[in-house]
Image (cartoon, rainbow, N blue to C red; front, side, top):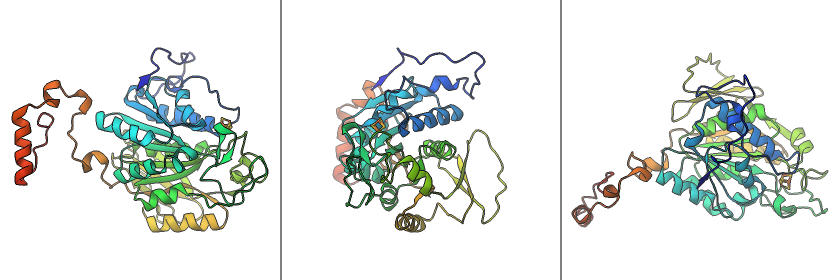
Length: 365
Ligand code: SF4
């Protein structure tokens, strides 16, 4: 894992606004993007920068993790003072799990793409959700392999046309439906060109104590922005069907919400922060997993993209609680604690033999 502390982002302009920890928005930027001008991924990067600045995230307490693809290059373009690990293709979830086990105090932000997640990394994605490892997992979804010249990915819609003229006839994988089916505690879908909706969803995902999946439609301007593509800017804008307006209220700024039945629904996240949803067109309850699946299915049959927080279950126990990890980060344990000695090991073995279980503590193994 590396940090870019030796190459800090350029300093803030004089008089720039500061957040609650005294940093400016410029402090959350990274190096210059090398993606194609107009790529949806750059818009997502901008939303991450703004969301992290507004939340007052301490950059050195966050780890950016990614796999392979255009999307997975983007962690270089934001939060240059954070830890970072660019993993091999589709293996980011394993790295995220390892980082969490080593230091549970780090906040994890995973950036992946539709190829990295829905094809080569689908097994890892499934087990990350199953274990509920606390990571905000973003899929920058454009339906093509942009890095290798625009082949269809596993999320390409039936009937979408490639730049070469070929039409996709294979059913796509709906990552939101899959995540809900697997019991993921936070599932949302958004659009890279809608920062007003995406930013609060990002904040909610970063506050969720468990795996939070956001599938972000992010048009590839080079290989998937033409007539006939269902993930082009024009087509997504035309068929975007927002579920609700989303607001994020940070836990350190308690605000009383005047909740009107039938119009808004508040979701309290595990760490005490909340998402308040304002319904525009119809009632939507993000705690109802069955309804979320039906909503996704109906939208697909109508050829629409449903955006917003689709499902939230903040009560689901996170990975560290499920496996009974010690409070102290493993990376900070002393040599004496990680090498408990013969006596402690014999005590553990005796516990296992007698069925009494092994004592678990920072120093006891
Ligand atoms: Fe973005 Fe597509 Fe260019 Fe890759 S090829 S950087 S996804 S526009």
